[in-house]
Image (cartoon, rainbow, N blue to C red; front, side):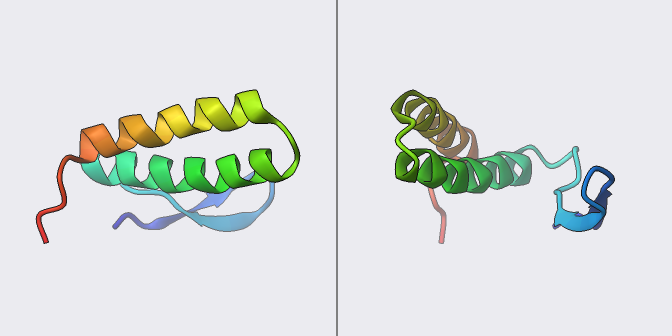
Length: 68
């Protein structure tokens, strides 16, 4: 996992993976998209929720099958 970086617009730490790790980046984007999709659904923004679900699907495709 990458080192936390400072979000200068809010001066708080966010956990951003190192750019070189493609799968971890996709996993991070998928998690954020999931949270944003839930917010969009709760606030009756169906098109945004749909677009964010597409981002989740794409991140899962990049990550590939779970090899646990």
